[in-house]
Image 1 (cartoon, rainbow, N blue to C red):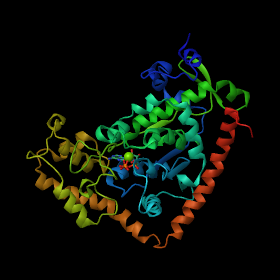
Image 2 (image 1 turned 120 degrees about the vertical axis):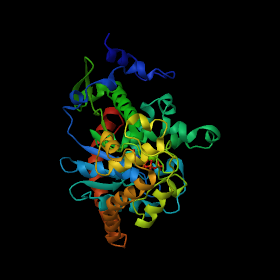
Image 3 (image 1 turned 30 degrees about the horizontal axis):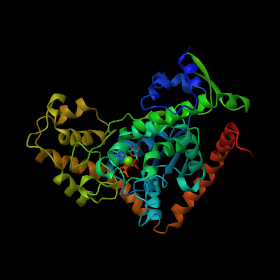
Image 4 (image 1 turned 135 degrees about the vertical axis):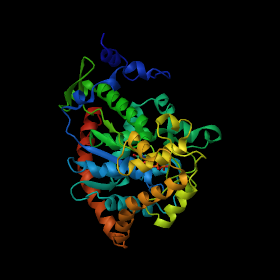
Amino acid sequence: MGECAAARENVNPILPTGVREIIFPGALHQPIEDIMAEFQKLVFSGVQPTGNLHLGNYLGAIRKFVALQKDNDCIYCVVDEHALTAQLVHEDLRGQTRAIAAAYIASGIDPKKHIVFNQSAVAGHAELAWIFNCVARIGWMERMTQFKDKAGGKNAEQVSLGLLAYPSLMAADILLYRATHVPVGDDQKQHLELTRDIAQKFNIDFSANIRKEGYGIDIKVGDEPVHAYFPMVEPLIDGPAPRVMSLRDGTKKMSKSDPSDLSRINLMDDAETISKKIRKAKTDPDGLPSEPEGLKGRPEADNLGGIYAAVPDKTQPDWLGELGGAQFSVFKPALIELAVSVLAPITEEMRRLPGDTSHIDAILRDGGERANARAEKTMKEVRDIIGFLR
Ligand code: ATP
Ligand code: MG
């Protein structure tokens, strides 16, 4: 019996922890190009309105969003429903949502050619997420590193059910548009693997109905033919800065939600603030090495050098060759100059955007209507596949 035939026999089991790998062996190792050939290429990604956008968001995600729009159909979302998972009550959720949308525009995303909108404007995200909550297994969610980090230790009793189900909503965000490519930072890799698992299980569990309703595409997973409704998304993680680390602790990711503002360089920081934050950034007494081995056990040096290289898209050997032997007292001013030069045009553009909220609101409303039209098509088909009475 082939792998997927075994999988089909296992429809809807209540699986013990660890069985996920047995159900869909090989699925994640399949050459993506083969699986994806039939689905129309569509780029989707999102950012949560949980605080100030930082250099990590820009280098790891938004800069890729901008580059991808040249040759692709793109949907960029402000994922406001995700913002409730870690913190329920926000002082100014509307303002934060507008700020992320403004940063998209200021960074160069074209909301007319593509779609920029906020997630809660399209009801299909929550509806499909519910269905995926019933497709996914609790064990899959509990194994997510981000969940374990945020829910670990004394927080275990305090975190919301929404935080556990976060990857299921993320899968719905992407698959609601049957998107094929998702540009994200390295921290989202595991969630995208789970998105593929959810798509895969849905395709297999509902294989007969997908065919009966006349939807879906014949693809191969391993040697087994599957009639798939949802594509296997391809994460676009590569780039010179897939994981920018905190300026205060080189072992922690730079995050919007980090309580210390000194831990990150915000897109809206002025030159003086950027300079202060980089001067205060944690380092060690040694200078920068010229060989990769010299970075071992020195996460802060690795991170600052990595940022210096990522802005102009340099590789590690390039920046080590250029900076090797430099003391931090010499290197930091160079890094300040570079960070200011990349962020200044974006900050300036954000300041130029009309102060009244109606401009951004109109962009989001227009994007929401266009996104909704696409989402509704998917949801009608999904309701038919599941067997909900119309
Ligand atoms: P939060 O702390 O609220 O989770 P965040 O800084 O992690 O905020 P998100 O909105 O969760 O930001 O993520 C938006 C995008 O930015 C995602 O694609 C994510 O992978 C990417 N990203 C986030 N932090 C970094 C980082 N430090 N380096 C590179 N990419 C990042
Ligand atoms: Mg995050």
